[in-house]
Amino acid sequence: MSWNTTVSAIGWRDSAYDGCRAYIRCLDDKALLPNLQDFFVERSKVSWIVKDLDASHSPFMSIPDQLTGVVKEIVAGFKSAMGERK
Image 1 (cartoon, one colour):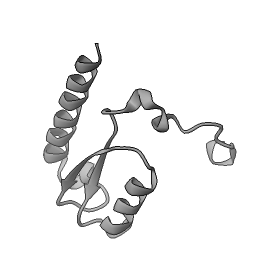
Image 2: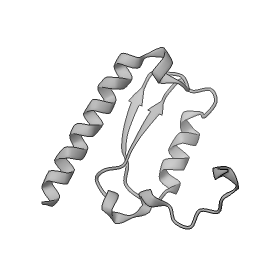
Image 3: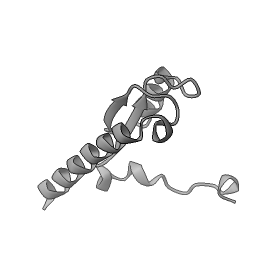
């Protein structure tokens, strides 16, 4: 089971992901408060594209269309960042 396995490397720390890491912060999340979300992002010590949604813990349930729009924005940014590397 994955929760019993020791992680040997954290993939998103790899510099290959620079410019292509994103976090969607849910501003009305009661399970993972926004200040805790910020703490996790900051603690990672890498750069993230952070997008905010006025949503609870499960935006895919409460505001799927808005979430889809934000994901599309993020993907477009990733494509741009990847194009700049070539």
